Length: 172
Image (cartoon, rainbow, N blue to C red; front, side):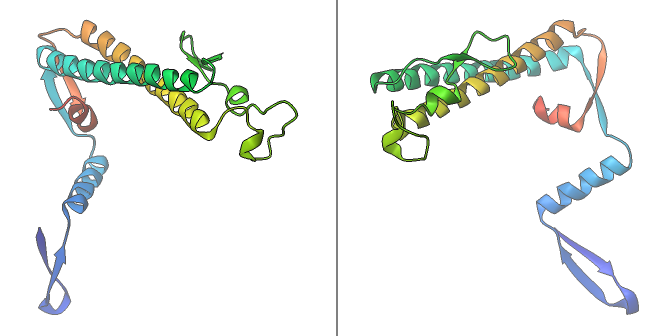
């Protein structure tokens, strides 16, 4: 998009703005002139919430499948099952603690020498990927729970104000 500006002395300057710049300017304008809100009925919002719940449910299922796969690789290669509960969580999910992931052989030291570690770098990487999948699964579960609560409490005929971020997140 081209924008033309009359400068001093009547000369014409041409300024090229990318789509990204135009969007950024629009966001700045919106933020400085108050938030943009759009009204939607509960009956319009509920299907969008359901789509988001389905999306997160699919992502959660993929995480669980990846965790099962990684667990099989770890145990199949001589590793152990996850050993500790996820921190700051009431989740029954187990993860690999730092102590297990970086445990050293008897008489070895944690000096970075691969031969001192009880588990190979491949097993340790898989343990890290397993832990990352655990955290993603917890995030998806939180999103699903939150969206489900909102969906249950929306009244079909009532109008709700949504800001730009909420509209975008719900696919409007």
